[in-house]
Image (cartoon, rainbow, N blue to C red):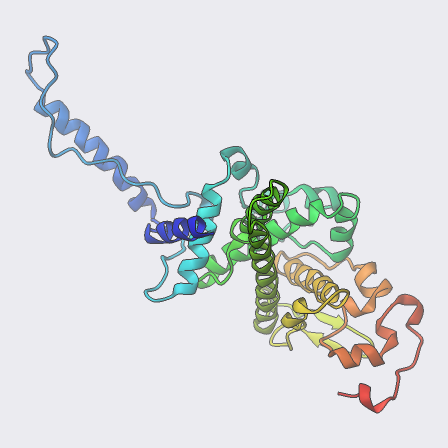
Length: 349
């Protein structure tokens, strides 16, 4: 963990995600070209009888590469002075990204969404199950409804959910940076890899009877749980500020509706700290509300989600308390939809 934090601090001290205009990006190449010309001029008339020419002290050293090179970093300013949250999030993401082999980074690189017919300005093409399940992260973020996440995660024993978690966090990370110039999450790399490394190394240490190896497993568990709480907080902020579209989304619940723009945040982030199945409830709701928001952001028509809207209505219902959930069986399952509310005083808010 100390090595990770030290690496993050080092990456944060570099020009993290600093963006350069076309002219700025061309500057190192122009300098190198001028240096080559000066070098040629300095060696004009030199007798090359096996003796190298003198070094041109004016030669410009190669420019240091940016922390991240890619289209997604265009227009992203460096962190503001004193914004330690932004510096930390960018640094952890960059450090963890650097720990991954190049082929995986290339396969998991975030990409711009394809447009219908390749025409700029047209609405983004909705994708089918396999396209969404196998796609790398995209901007605008891909809409992955609850039914798709469940259908892909259960047969893979939650293996695909790790890909969903990575993709969602990476999309939100870059969306934050590109829209606000500030990151409040560590992205897919920074959220998932510290957990994987800590649990993997700690688990191996326990098998080898290394003293206190279980501490690493506990640190990894705390890290991923804190990241989950932070994800719910960010989804709430997205819903409170609306979506990048001119249309509003109406959320139908049991006798209620709620609009996206300026609406009440749908999640209780602290429910992630509750024991199962209550922590699963808020997790499923995050899937649904983020998918609805992402569909609107891509200009896609919402095709519905039978799992969230019919089979388990609590997933798509507007924000509710634990007491309301307990006294409203119509929110629980499809076969309890016709039941009346319980009227016990201790269940009232």
